[in-house]
Image (cartoon, rainbow, N blue to C red):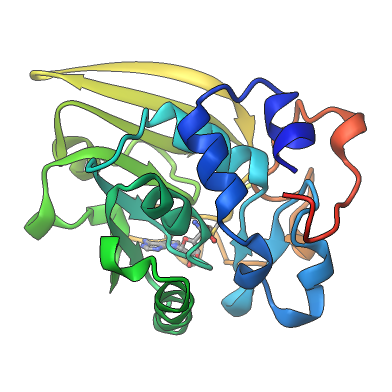
Length: 240
Ligand code: SAM
């Protein structure tokens, strides 16, 4: 997975590649699809949500420029995989999930892997961030927002980076924001498709009903449209 899906597509940050070699992705998907865990795709998890495609996890993590000890907020815990990758790097992570059952299952997985020490998982509306633990040196939003949430921007530390997919519920652009004092430098990093961020600074549940990958038109959720066909095959769980 790391060579074919990440290195070949330009992921260069050794810290990120090493973490993604370490974290057993098969433990973050439902048992009946464990054989698909290393496929070049987002996969369904409970509550109609998804675990993101490996490439997009790597890309978003790389854009954060993560390092050991970095204080990071993740919005959208889902399976806990992204939080586990950040924890494997040594980041100090606060991760927020709106579905209590997903949060609970993610906590159990991380605990089993010995990664919960660096991760705090909370239930709530992550579009409003987590003021009690702000400011953050990095914020990664793993669900699609209609615009860059102003509250999340305000919770960035000086020099901090925010990565968030922004667009419609069906298609988005990956946006990177860097805070420099009171200025915010914004850059675009290509197209992607995520499940919606549902909350006060996200979409309303009516305008963006949550759905699993099987009902998402126009591409697999959390996929990178530029994915090459050579890496679109599946992989065995030992194919890290
Ligand atoms: N990062 C996850 C992983 O590694 O498995 C994948 C996240 S999944 C693509 C998006 C997640 O965002 C879903 O679990 C969804 O319930 C959650 N979500 C959506 N809106 C949210 C909100 N306002 N606050 C917190 N979580 C939210």
